[in-house]
Length: 491
Ligand code: NBP
Image (tube, helix red, strand yellow):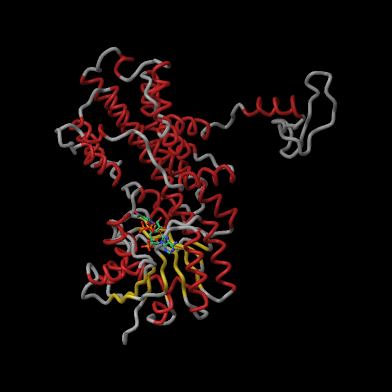
């Protein structure tokens, strides 16, 4: 091969093939390799035919085809496969060359790989890529982190293939050092879990409490999509509700109610617990999937644990006026809960940045999610604007643009939760986020009693409201305990 390729890509599954075609559309020549080499031939003779896309039977051949500094992107299954390719590539590369991992890697792996390759003089980028097959082909959201020295060399390619936000900005910018890019992608996916769960709760309220048919629900979601809830997930929900099975009935009702998950939601909840950040809505969304998966057990439980079940709680369907009021409340509830979920997600990113030593532009993160990815939505522009106005914003809920909305929406949110509770409809995301909100806006919580209990049974000590912070007290609550306090014991 005479001409050298601008970038190499290893991993010709759905994401890899589409990213390669996207890069080539933007004028980049790409060298490609895949473990199963038959896939290379199929690709070159199929969608890549006639394009500046060159096959390589081995990683060494691929590296030999690249311009310097060499850029090699991995789009393979996350985990040990990535390490194995890195081990193969490193001896073939020179200092200053770049390895990019675009798979869904766990962020500690990207931290480790960035440091390990830095020692060898190789630049490492761990990047989240969101948008699935279509996004990869026409414009994904790309969230790169790792070795910042590599960014100028990768930026033109990534920003040219990325989606565009409504204002024309590319949905790709530098996130931060080490594992920051994959961390932000992990939070993106977790927020996606939350958005999806909230929509399913609204669907169940519409269907079981209000007795709406699928066309009515589709119309309502389409209406929401024309307003402040405008988002990809609301849009596809309306579309899904309109699809019928071969017998003419709604296909969605034929789908088994057990949700799957691949791990990013779980990783987020584990990390949040370790960092002490209450991402309650995301956690409920992860656990709602876990509970849904226990289908057989739920069937058995439904036989012994009878209770209200949507309309039966009210005894009859609400009047048209009442139904309209409930739906108006529901839209506000979903919106307020969604703001709270994003506020929790950004709390976690902020704490992770502090803990792991990353400098992250939070407004830019929201900006990267405005197009190409699954959580793309209109209101992300408000988040970007809020951080632009105050880069040190403690929490999104405190930004004037959101605090104003919340004050207006919260009464409707409370009514929606009450309605769901009274009707026996589970709404874990909507209700737990409301509890978070009530606690977050409380200057005083009942944790004083909790501290008293801890001191009572374990001599864990407490601070007092009438003494400076950092002074600890112990009470001999029963008269039979001693004055020795606990330093390490935690019951
Ligand atoms: P997969 O996640 O299914 O991975 C397939 C690729 O990994 C193929 O190239 C396959 O080679 C290679 N591979 C596997 Br599997 N085991 C291997 C091994 N032991 N040694 C070498 N190569 C191996 O593909 P994908 O869905 O295109 O996703 C690629 C990455 O992007 C993943 O990390 C995924 O999590 C992430 N991602 C996917 C999506 C999506 O919507 N699918 C979205 C965003 C991010 P082979 O052809 O020889 O089997």
